[in-house]
Image (cartoon, rainbow, N blue to C red; front, side, top):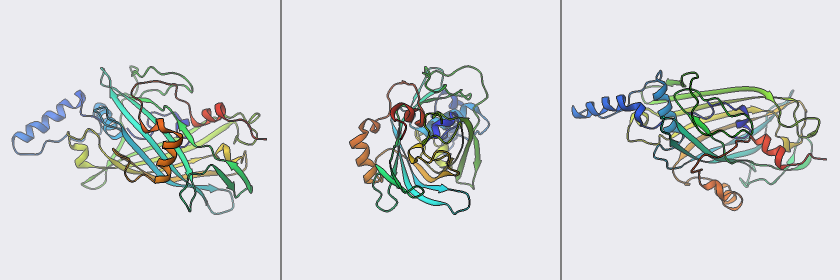
Length: 320
């Protein structure tokens, strides 16, 4: 979402399927069913295999069917000495698929776009009047095809920028344990925070008006809210979830703010869906007209992954 892929962290956007890793848990559920109790998968927050399976079920559908991701919210400008200013809305449209591999890991494959929309009309912006500079600028949406990573029982190192990963889990590494908590008897919360400080893909010596400097400082904060009953249900090959997402980052390059003090903040909510119902019509119309390939998730692993800033450097030219 946005420039979220710049962080290059495997914990991005959450991390389930009822696979071989959960055989023991399912056996417990089946045994319970024979005595009149409902079958279930016990929560095992400290089990890397349970975490892997939970992540795959949340991200998509372990049958291989695609799932849509949607996020919506507002982008605010933040400058020293003044209140935050709503600038425009954002709409994230993604299609996601997970495919189970022979070793139990999953290839998590995604196409995603981030569109920016008018705060009053909801129409997708192609140009925008920057209130800070009084300059009309060209809006460049995020379009990442693909954005892929591997979900395994160990954390998988992200591929280097522009590198082609073969989609296979690498041996070794830290156990794949996510940050879960129980919020009352019926709700499970997954917390994912990522704080980055990394070289800017846009060299300020070349991208004088677009680059915020040599380094980028950014943070993403995710909160997933999940039905405990759904998470424990072995019949749920996809577990729907709702959540909140906050991202703090430098000005978008197309805003032409350069090294002007300040930054932007994305503040939004997200959900998953098996259908296109309830998506804003302007967003679907834009995707169908300009990015029709994004309506279908990848069916096989390909690459490389490029961040939105890498795409910008490849596809845009420095402003005069």
